[in-house]
Image (tube, rainbow, N blue to C red; front, side, top):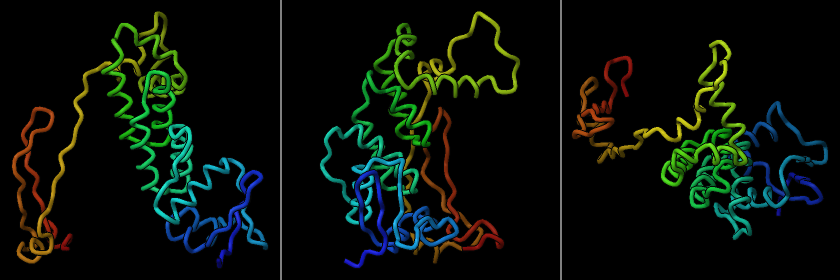
Length: 237
């Protein structure tokens, strides 16, 4: 009721509300209201590069903050992640990342890793590397690298490793991607919780800091200084 925009996706059409979409997606906002406006006089937007079922799930999420039960969920989540990245729907993108982490296997890790690399999904990329390190002995890494999805990654990593250097002569060195997977890289995070935030702002003058308890990262001990009202007059509040 009250729909003022129609999307034609393949052979299907979906009615929607401009304000609802624009409020959640800056890309939709630009396409429907800004200089990138794509709709014609009849309020119809044609989308050619997204599957109708994927777009339907995308709209459902924007209206209900939920996803339907999906057959072949891993494949749907891959397509939804791409669509979420396209429309800058960060929460949906994170949900797809999280679900895909549970579907990583030898048969699809290359494709999922390539997807994570292309769409800047650091958490999903880390999960793929962790899977490869824990499931793939170094002596069979070359066989795994032959799987679908690794071609794009190998070129990407090789370019990053060799950019600005003369061409590599034979015999070629080990793949930088394989080295990145096999290397025992230390990763992790610390969660810092600020309790009674408003009280810290009221009781801590500008330029004064609260100091965290000690934490260890990469073999070094650290403390973090938190300035509730800025560390000097120019950065107050």
